[in-house]
Length: 313
Ligand code: AMP
Ligand code: MN
Ligand code: MN
Ligand code: MN
Image (cartoon, rainbow, N blue to C red; front, side):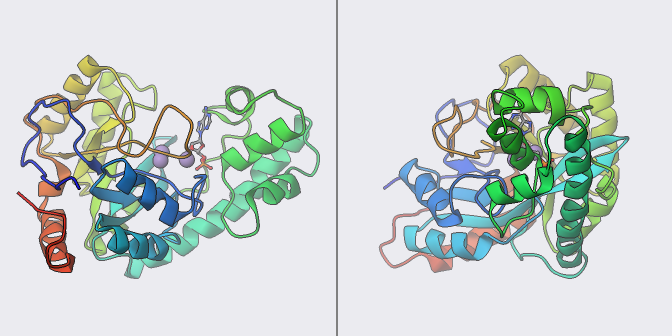
């Protein structure tokens, strides 16, 4: 069994780190049940993971039970939808103490926001030729989880309006299209506050994914850091190495820690738990050396059975 050896810095070693701090399950728009995501992590040598479902922590209890069976360290997490400067921005909360107070209330508000947003998305899609859009999306999503754009994308494909998910986003649900409804989300700084108050670490998710210029990305990082955000994803899935190095400079300039994750949603695609571009040697500190996360990792050493398979260095 692989050991968990979390280096204190990014060494430029391209071998997998055994860390994945951004993944989805059926608690949001992922395909696998929380326990199955954990099992897949175990199979693939991920030893420290965070389950980060969109605006929900409903999968955490199941994931924690599976993680303790498989001797994997699981950080409770969630990926919160926010709004900054008219752009939908995602913030990952890494939450060693779970959600309390404003964050617990915020999660309830996010679920309600998803409900009312789904009504608006449905109205817009009805105009472009998908009757009963809300009922169709709900049918595909099942009764339990809050609706998201992927559910509407599947409904468009199932009704034959578009040939595939990619086209659904490109024409109707992606950035700037009719179904890209984001007015329901709270401000970036507010959401960062929820996470801090719950004892967590706020991580700006995939800063390279928004098509921003370097300067505008800098403004986003400024706003995030000023609000108290502590980290940003240096690597999210696969990305260009030069771009990663440049992003590392932007994080270092603001004293942000670096996180990393696959953003895994479903098996069979190009992403799997633990799969992402290598992290170059950088001056940026890994997020697991942040005191709030380091303390959690140290404390979880007590949970390891005698003769257990995990060591820490
Ligand atoms: P929502 O959280 O409802 O705003 O939906 C956003 C989710 O849609 C993202 O987290 C992705 O999982 C998915 N998504 C975004 N863009 C695409 C795309 N072009 N193709 C497939 N899925 C996408
Ligand atoms: Mn998603
Ligand atoms: Mn995201
Ligand atoms: Mn995600």
